[in-house]
Image (cartoon, rainbow, N blue to C red):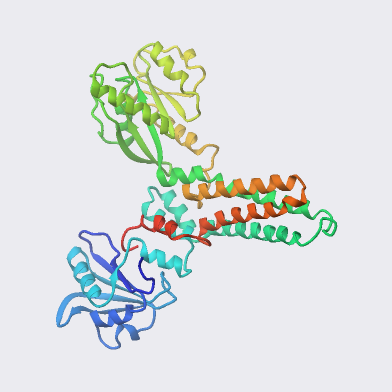
Length: 457
């Protein structure tokens, strides 16, 4: 375990050639180290006002390492709420590495992954939700995902959790206060009022849980699997949506033997398009493995596009696949409508389908709109981007709701001897919400979150 009062340093810009690289130092010895390695006209960095830039040279004894700019940030007005120095040097790997080496030799240690952000959390600069938002901004796959993460970093989601936490805390305190009184001494209707407040809190909790689906789409991207019999146009559809020739297209059945995945953004939603092996009976072991992978992907897909060739009649094999597509995340694409249409649409059983001719680029706009409509599920992604919960938040909220429901059920029994159990359930519910924001945490939780960060963030 590292010591929080250590002075840490790291290169905070990406590796490779660039105009500028930045080395950050944070901790109680930041200015002592800055005075040691950075030479400039008086006064020295430690005597400079906060939030000022200083021109000078990074030097190792009498040797100039680089010409640089130094930024002074004094505690508590910095990201970590510690004394912080940032040295902006020439871009590229070598200059920044040489400067970092000299800084480490002067008393700092190399920062661990996410340690700057972790210190910001431990020092009360941000809560755990905001810390996770930093990672979401870095990993954002679309403009909408970036905007939602920025709202979370600004504390909008934290405010909703704080209200939920405080409301539950107040009700819990009021219920615990009733333990000091007999049922006859309590004001009339007080338990009914407390139960009403708990129901209102559960409704707010449900609203937060409902944002998970949108959060999943923005953070992880929706998996869209394209399947169908060989030669129906699956690879052509992938290439057309991407706008480039990613998959090999051939008139020979079974060309695609394995899954091909590519990222795409439509309407602000990041997508993972998966082209798959054609579904058919095959004696080829390699092709059979590809077909097994296709079926596995269909099971975990957020949306399944099943393609049919309009120039051929629907056979028993296609009918079997259509019967399996009863969920709303499935979409039928009827391709090659520019050829002779031999489909009996009555066999589609009123399932949602789109007529397309990929050869003539017909039906693409309708397909994109339909994909967005299906993923939006009632329009939640039509509104302005807003902070939404992650998988970790959802799991804790579900546990919190489980405890809250137990408490409500006990209160509905109107038995005085259950009040202590109600109070216990509410405390557990509160603890789970506290774990979301970091009001309560364990070292293992922090390690799990911050280990996903890069060094320098």
